[in-house]
Length: 402
Image (cartoon, rainbow, N blue to C red):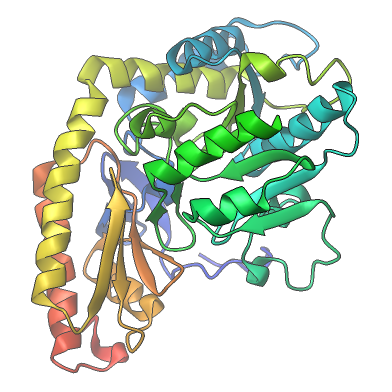
């Protein structure tokens, strides 16, 4: 398919996807691919899950859009489910992860303003962070590559080393409105935070009167096992941002807010036209029903052990190719030796029928559907083993797929 009419801001693979089913995608030539990136951690229940498809179809026949000028049942019910399951107090819906983080940034600053602290404006983030591509979330992103040519960035953002709780203590002060952190950093190469670091963040936010924001856009919605990533770490934030897997493929983002900040945003302070529309909310509710029906948390815990064991086997078998293994739940990465560009390996794996992603640090990123089977793990292992064998044999990059 020609993409001449599209802006060239993506390096798309030279295949055209026409259908999805479970953990597999199919192209226009009938070839099947095992999808171990799931739309970049979006299709947590796989492609075209029948419960999700049915919910979308039924909702689209009754109400597609009403705007946020009125109440409608899907958004209200979804908000109730999310605050009940998280223990937080209120929900705000938007369309994407970067919009959820924009809302969280505005919430933090408005909260300080309403408390009579207009000088408390700093948003503290971490090195290695990625929070989105709109200006506020981009300013909170540490990687300068994403900012090049888009300056000047908004002011009022600072950074502290990830997982360094002593530096975090040093960098905290009364100007900090919020500390935003990913419990597992995805774009930088899949780096989990330590429990000690997140616990220190909680302590410092309480001490200095700042909000603790967890960006769970990539690592939440059951990817680490529990529905919310913070539940695995045992540290409760004031704000959680989420998107990606929430509606299993339909665009929706959410910000969940604890009791201390529910009055920060008043009518007119922030809004969105499409956020919380009935169809994606219906899909998200169906996602939660599926999760309950199959006890997804226990299922992910089993698959995590199996998948990490297979990745460990690969790391042991190919020490000259694989430089490290990182991850938690079903968000994992294999760091490759710098001699082997990750883009070439992603291409070779695609030719072997396995779709994976890339991330910082020359890393292969895995974010498979959470419903994957042990047979799917074995199939992925076989493709990885074949490609790594060819690399170890000294095959040139262009011949990896052959």
